[in-house]
Structure formats: C-alpha cells, structure tokens
Image (cartoon, rainbow, N blue to C red; front, side, top):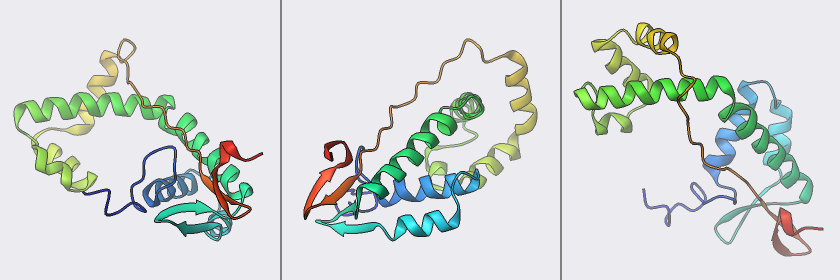
Length: 164
C-alpha cells in the first residue's frame, strides 16, 4: 500500500494513525481495560489537521498514550503473547519451508491461514508439541513502540512531550 496516499491510515510512530488508534481501542476494549464510554470520549477529541490525526487537548493525548503504553508493555510484550508469537513463528517458518502456505496466503485473514495449515497438520497438536519441547532459550525481538501524540495547544500543533 502506498502510505503517502493514506497518511491518516498509516503514519509512522511516534504519531497517531487510524490503524494505531483502531487496534489500541479495540484491543483495550476486548481485554476490559477501556469502556465504550471512554472510547466515545476519546473519539470526540480527534481532529484532522494537515492530513494528520491530532488531538484537541493534552488530556486526550495523555489518556491515549497511557492506554497505548499499557497495551504494548502488558499485552504485546506480555509472556502469553510472546509465547504464542514464538510458537507461531516456528510453525509459519516450517509451513513456508514445506510449501503448506505461501506468501500470498498472508494477504488473507488469520482464519484463512490457520485453516490452510490445519488442512495439512493438526495445529493444536503442533502447538502442544512446541510447548512441551520448551521455549526458554528462544527469544522474540520486539520493536520499541512509543507514541507521542500531537496536540493542539494555543492554535499550534505540538507533540505531547513538548507540551508543558
């Protein structure tokens, strides 16, 4: 995808993007850390400025930054998520190497990919086998995810870290 054409959808960290806002709010609701009322409140704080997503106040920016930080530290980098990512990395590498899945399969949804793997192998048994062999010596390198939302302050756009 040409991200230059879709800056609201995909914009580099540390800035906001529609995708980043979407998965943060959706995932935080699913794990019970954010209520629909809070989501509505936050959405009211969004503004489009110069083809970017900015926030109406420091309060919205601090709220989103805290939720995003929680999601990345406690969920994405949490032990359960790291474990399943290590397991899936091993399964996907093996399936790519044996031709069970191919690169175009990644343009489908997760269910399609899992079904395709399950047609050839028992995915649950494979996951159990990998777990029983141990994952202690395996490492998952995660990218540092820091968000520093832009905020409207006195008719200027500043990053939250620049607001005093």
